[in-house]
Image 1 (tube, helix red, strand yellow):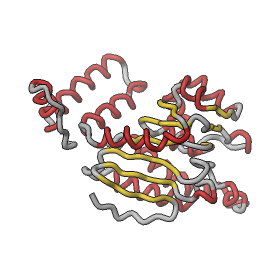
Image 2: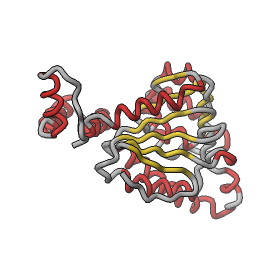
Image 3: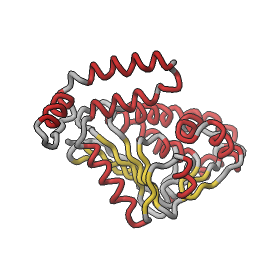
Length: 266
């Protein structure tokens, strides 16, 4: 699997169907700025269309996962600030939407602090592995801003409307234990184990039935928008379509033959 994605703000590599994006501006706290928004948008546009991208791991270098929006850049904008925000969010919001919709499951490995728009980037992942000492901060109201980056959807889908509203209104900081109890993250491990555990899960997913994973992601993303009866019909139609895939047929054969299935992602 070859990737031709050259970026200034993150590294992107791939091996055996697993794409690994590493935020790589540690001296700046891995901020979200115009360059990151543009580059991340381009990368996800390509990855979301690649049949050989079967899982994605999102992690970061340095002491922090991400400080969120680059306030040093924003404060210099003056009257041009609204236009800059619209430009940045135009790229970033499309990227996050595509990441949520792509069939490949996304695993986030979170350490240090996560703040601002990067909270939504994290929450948009399908599975989140968090270090014990990490913290998640809702920084928007502290600087007189409202949330962006899909925060009011991605965080709400994980912890519910009332709890998400409180998180953003009060500008709370959550420790790992609280985030886990709320469902904002999925797994908490020792600081030194977060990268290895997230990579292990991502590799397992990359070797799995990718079309089925994509169907699972899609079904869960629409549960709040459909009636129960409509969702039941969607499950039936989706399962019938998935049953035609090579991986579904391999899975059934392997079960009958009492062996471990070998999935191809097709």
